[in-house]
Image (tube, rainbow, N blue to C red; front, side, top):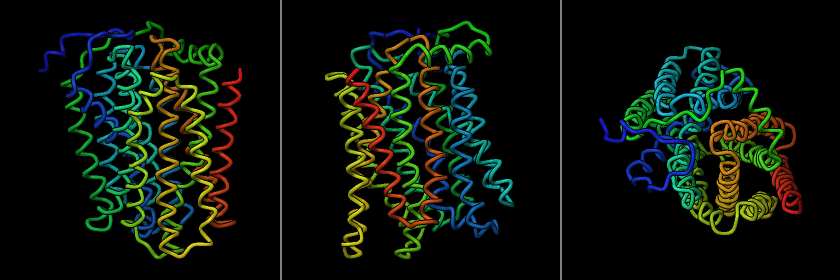
Length: 403
């Protein structure tokens, strides 16, 4: 048992720096947990064929996973303010490992959809890990620490597509889910060993805890603007990634491994997360959100030039755009989290829940709208939707800055 396990931390600022081993474990846990909700995207065609499901039914897999994530964030993340967050993380890791294993056994699309919803709900352990890092970090290093942990989370999002696309092509999609279940079980044990106990920040009943979220939403305009701006960016992000594999297959004849490899480009942008945290500490998160939203809108708009390029140039431009918009989205997300975590330290779990509920509602909306746009008007419509989402976020952030 770790020596840290006999201690507890308050939800306020702590002056002792977090050990590097703990930060790494937190980052790995966040990345592996959130990766669970993205594994399916490059494998949709393979899974659909295996389960004898049509395109529209298979397309519900990522949508229901994201809906489950949003539901789990809203109803379960507040428990981290009421109970020991270390125990909450352990329980969720066990449930997520079980859901991933059951997914590998799915015999038809209906079971797959049900287990996908369960995966989304349990994968919210990632959003328990991030507030834990904020609670453990000294105030002067909170942005950098959250940024480092979020790097693990964001790399997990992006590299999940690379890993799942490759494993699905070499071993099979069921084997991917088996390996994912094993990884969650192992990281859950590791987190239990390195984390201290957390003193609850609230003694409210569960209904009162949920009601307090509405009060927090009303009390803090900065929270509302952060959630709306990040939710808009999530629409564009999800529209792009949820349709990319289908577009690459139809337009270029590329398989799941090739589609997943584009996640490497996005991962390059995600590596800027610690820099975003440091810039937020130095210059204020508001400025970072404005610059990040602008980068997202411009990066998506670059893809309007695809028809005028040769095939090699088109693929290169898609990769460049992925680097740019992922960099902007992740920088903006880190800045928004740094901003809201300072509003009311004892309510970080609930503040995080509100932010990410809106974010993953945006993800689900983006998946649905992206699929419709691709089917009705092709890839340019997906790009247009993403550009509008980025511009909308920039307008919200500029308006907030003016006030």
